[in-house]
Image (cartoon, rainbow, N blue to C red; front, side, top):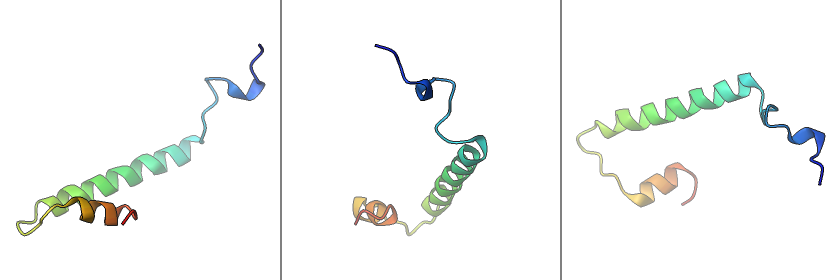
Length: 56
Protein backbone atom coordinates (compact mmCIF):
# COMPACT_ATOMS: atom_id res chain seq x y z
CA UNK A 1 0.00 0.00 0.00
CA UNK A 2 1.63 3.32 -1.03
CA UNK A 3 2.15 6.08 1.49
CA UNK A 4 0.75 9.57 0.91
CA UNK A 5 3.30 12.15 -0.22
CA UNK A 6 2.75 14.29 2.90
CA UNK A 7 3.78 11.59 5.38
CA UNK A 8 7.51 11.90 4.75
CA UNK A 9 9.54 11.52 7.98
CA UNK A 10 11.62 14.55 6.89
CA UNK A 11 8.59 16.86 6.89
CA UNK A 12 8.21 18.46 10.35
CA UNK A 13 4.76 19.06 11.77
CA UNK A 14 5.63 22.66 12.71
CA UNK A 15 8.21 25.03 11.27
CA UNK A 16 11.45 25.71 13.11
CA UNK A 17 10.43 29.09 14.61
CA UNK A 18 7.29 27.54 16.14
CA UNK A 19 9.27 24.65 17.58
CA UNK A 20 11.84 27.03 19.07
CA UNK A 21 9.04 29.14 20.55
CA UNK A 22 7.51 26.00 22.07
CA UNK A 23 10.83 24.93 23.57
CA UNK A 24 11.38 28.44 24.97
CA UNK A 25 7.88 28.47 26.48
CA UNK A 26 8.43 25.03 28.03
CA UNK A 27 11.77 26.16 29.44
CA UNK A 28 10.19 29.34 30.85
CA UNK A 29 7.36 27.41 32.54
CA UNK A 30 9.74 24.83 34.01
CA UNK A 31 12.09 27.60 35.16
CA UNK A 32 9.25 29.49 36.83
CA UNK A 33 8.09 26.30 38.51
CA UNK A 34 11.60 25.59 39.77
CA UNK A 35 11.95 29.15 41.07
CA UNK A 36 8.60 28.87 42.86
CA UNK A 37 9.66 25.53 44.32
CA UNK A 38 12.51 27.33 46.09
CA UNK A 39 10.00 29.32 48.14
CA UNK A 40 10.05 27.97 51.73
CA UNK A 41 6.27 28.20 52.24
CA UNK A 42 5.36 26.33 49.06
CA UNK A 43 3.13 23.31 49.51
CA UNK A 44 3.05 21.29 46.31
CA UNK A 45 -0.24 19.46 45.81
CA UNK A 46 -1.77 17.66 42.81
CA UNK A 47 -4.77 20.00 42.90
CA UNK A 48 -2.47 22.99 42.57
CA UNK A 49 -0.58 21.46 39.64
CA UNK A 50 -3.82 20.59 37.85
CA UNK A 51 -5.15 24.12 38.41
CA UNK A 52 -1.94 25.57 36.93
CA UNK A 53 -2.42 23.37 33.86
CA UNK A 54 -6.06 24.43 33.52
CA UNK A 55 -7.41 21.00 34.41
CA UNK A 56 -9.01 21.79 37.73
